[in-house]
Each structure stands twice: as C-alpha cells, then as structure tokens.
Image (cartoon, rainbow, N blue to C red; front, side, top):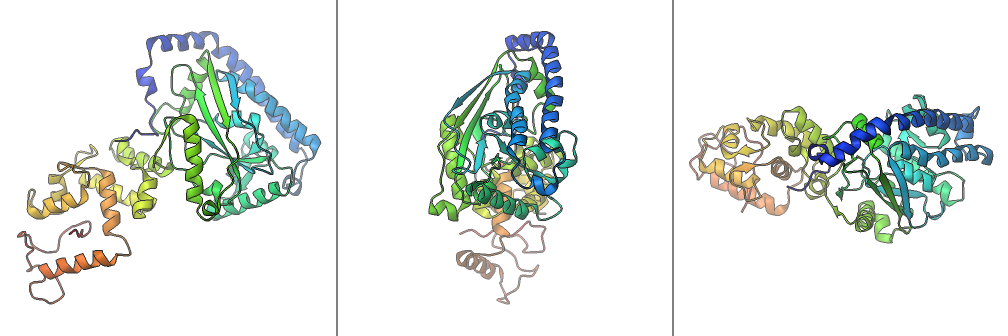
Length: 443
C-alpha cells in the first residue's frame, strides 16, 4: 500500500542518541524557552490589541492606517524568537517574495504542524481564512482582527461565502489596496512531509496569480508532523522545545499566473502548482485528500486499523464520483462484513454477508468483481468502495446497460421481463431475493 501521510510513527523508532539529546534539552533548554515564550505571547497580544484598539467593524474592513500597520509589523519581527522557543534556531529563505498586486494569494505546502504559518508570515506578512466564531477567543480573536483575516460564518453556506470573500480580497489587492496577502494551505489538513496530497481548489477558484511556497521543517532527529495517527500536539510542542538545533527552509517560487486552461479548471491549476512545490521539495505527489483523514478516524472508531480508511480519496472522487457521505456509508457496510475487523474481507465473509454458500460460483464471481487487485483471498476497503460506487452510479452508460439486459435475459427463463425466486442463474444459485450490495455486470 502507499505510505500513509496521516501517520507519524517516528517516536517508535527514536534513536537512543536522539532520546538522550532531547532529555538533556528538557533539563537545560525547556525551562528557558518556556519562560521566553511566556513573555513573547503577551507582548504579541499587546501589539495586536494596540493595532485594532477602538476600531469599528467598518474600519477593520478597510486597510489599517500606516501607524497601526507598524504596530502589527512589530509582531512580525518577534516571530523568529517564537520559532527559537520551539527549537528552530535558523530560518533559511530562497527566492523572492512577490508583490501583493502581482500575487494576491500565497499557497504553502506541506502543512505539517501549527507553526507552518510562522516562517511564511515573517517573510511575507499575510492573513488567513478563519471561522468567524474564532474572533471571540482570547488572544486569537485579537490577532485575527489585527491580521485582517477573512472570517467565514459556518452557519451559512461557508464554502460559497469563503470563495466570495477570497474573490473580494483578491480584487482589492489587485487594485492596489493595502491589505495583507492571503496565505492558504491548500492541502486542507496536516500531513507528514514525505509527499504532497491533493490540493483543495479554493485558493485557485479566483483564477488569480499565486506564489507557491515550499516549506521544510528539519527537526533534530524526529518528525514534527502533527497528524491524526501520531503524537499529540502537546507532545509535539514539548519535543520541539527540547531539541537543540532545528531549521526551517522556506522557498518562494516564481509567481504562477494561470493559463486559460487553468482558469477554466481550478483542479488543473491546483495540480500544476502542487507539482512545482513537489519538484522543489524532491517528494512525490499522492491522490490522498483531507477526506482520507476523516475516513481514517472513522475506521479507528469502528475498531479497524487506521490504514483501512486511507483510500486516496481524491483519485476515487475523480474516477468514480464518490462523495465523503457515501464513503462513510460504505465504511459502515464494510465494517459489518469484516467480521474480525482486521481491514480485510475474505471470500467466505463476503459470501456469508450476501447469504450465499461460501465457495459457490456466484459468490466467487461477485467477489472477483469487487476485488480488482488480483487478490483472490481478501477484499480491501478501497476495492469495495470502488465497486460500490460503480454499480450504484446514478447514470449508467449504454454499454453497461446492454450488459445488464443481457444478464437479465439469461436469468429470465419465462421471458416475462421480471426475475422471480423460481428463476435459477446459470451457476445454480437462486435468483432472489438476496442481501446483495448491488448488481455488478461484467463481460
């Protein structure tokens, strides 16, 4: 199976020398860095608060006056000290930061932990898209106002509202308005840094030029990725604050102005930008998406291995049109078929679920229809979801309909146009009724 970008197992194989360095760092570095961080956070909050003090909502919707922007910029110069508190001693930058009017949107990848925004913010002061309710949170709400982030109300149609707000900000930046650039992490989820998963199209729907940014965190002997199957965020932060020397590499790529084809197809635009970032990082691209993380968590809740839910969802979505809602339903069905919850369905389990005799020709034929990997002993969830999506598709092609009617003619011994329980199939199995996920027709 392909590597799982939502699993971090680095602490299971931590070299003894690294463990000793981290322990020594815990004794000597952690107290000092924690003290420095406890001073920096209130200072940053005070600067953000002063930048928006007594500003009305209407004033916050416009670019901040230069005097207030200087207060906000002071926070920018404190960001390296915040990274130092987390053990990242050096930041290295390659490439030039584009002007806001030339690239209103900055797309950065991979997104591996909550500190990813810090080096990008230091070199290119920018804002993000956030939920409107976050402005009520202590410290964070003040920072979001000062950074003039785009706030989206999830109670409404959040996706549509986010696209409209991004379009409005892009138009303002291209017209010369002194807003910060928009920083977007298009993966939509944190992952490990071994590859790049599919990019969400939100940053590319406005069809505006973007500046790709390649991020690489180099911690001291461990993986600092915060993912769904891995160390908790407090543990990740603790390890960072105990390391002796970590580095952050930030590469600003040339501005990518979309072609006519990319303007018409945001997915194409996103894929091409992803390829550019992957080439700089020297990593591969995968068809995983944030939905894989959701399915992985759902599989764990059902007592199955986390890897069951990692199905390269973006590729399946394009190939068979499956939705996340349908995939969750298929996972429920799969967990019922998988009696021992090991993530694999045997031919016997599949036959019993269909109320067919194990080893019968009909059961083996249906099992072979779903198991497209050539594995005749086990069916995996990705194969199951592919088969179910194909056979339950709302629109059937003419060729598939011809196959369906050909099979109906074979089973309909009385030429009545209906199947009855008295109609036997060519393999000696009763034609109905059965508990079958769906009919699968193959030539």
